[in-house]
Image 1 (cartoon, rainbow, N blue to C red):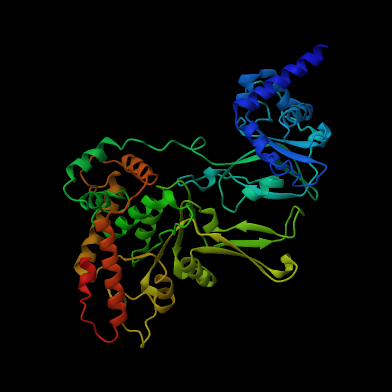
Image 2 (image 1 turned 120 degrees about the horizontal axis):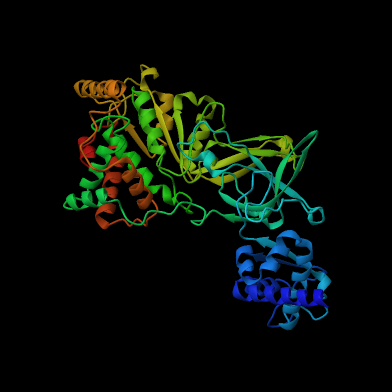
Length: 530
């Protein structure tokens, strides 16, 4: 009698939990795929009715602590109890045919929150209980194995640390939620991973949720005081604030007067990284061309540290993806995401594009189409090769040293506007980048002055650890990071003046390029003015 009363209390508590959350409406919605409520017509003839019920353990704990404890420690018994509750709901509301019995309902419980994964001998830090696998709850079904790593592995500034990937077993409708390079919160339990004679750790996914602001650092709402004072001081001109920020940006890497336009372009791209994952948005790519490749690379790496995710591409890694045999034996092949897929929502620093060798054609196709294509060879696809497209959701930053570019007699000149030569092999790629910055000036005196500033800053830092070329301003690096983080998550609206300026620049550029071979009435210097 006591057990019956306890079971009834649990059923009432679970029913109350469904009513307070959106789970009850979800059950009603799922019934519509089986029966038309208005005409009572059976849409799908089946002997098993499957329902997915999302449960928050924290909310269930507030409703009934004993029920939450039973769910986490004896899930099989609680699923049977939930089955009875759902059957009572669909029967009372006449959502399914009256002949449907309780045994015909299949209840899948998806947890929406759990404490962080325990590493120390799988001991719960709250109650001290040991985490054990319930073998009776093993799911025997087709699965997809996804190897995941912590988000910290792709965070800028993380060095001298090694991150181990963990295989995740994904089944049923959760498979559609997993994408290459995506960010997710996985709720599940640890299981043994058997690979031939090796025994490892894996996670059986119970639910997969997208990464939201609940799992990340909050976005600064208020701008730093130093930035607000700068805005007040520069309010007379809409360009002055951008010029001032670009002047002081990355002063720790190179003196303020050096690489000014490149810094301005990097800041512009950083402001747009908050919209990279929105549908239809094309990332803005940057190519920096100059002989001082060391300082340019440091500048790109420093600017990329202002984003949440940064991937530095090397010749050992793949640009898009690689396909190999599945070591788990669950599929015919395994796809490993490359640098561009792993850098979703952030920056992919390629380095010198002259070193890409065989991947130059792949990079050109990605920049022109804005899409990544993963090709599965015929030996894994059992027939013709398969091409799986993915949207490009990262900004590509690259550099090139024109010193090694070979000039041909047929092409003695350089770029139409800057008169810089990058070589025919690199020029085809340079035309695909959204912004190309030539850091070498035509005026040799200006380059010599910039070299002197760089040498002076390097020697000063080596001697006393300070930089004498640092601008006298109250804006610190921390203030700049807060400003970039706040702005890149905001909504940007373009004014009519800005649209007319861009349209004028685009039309002028088309007019100059189309008539440059036959002579033009439009002065090239007007492009610099625009």
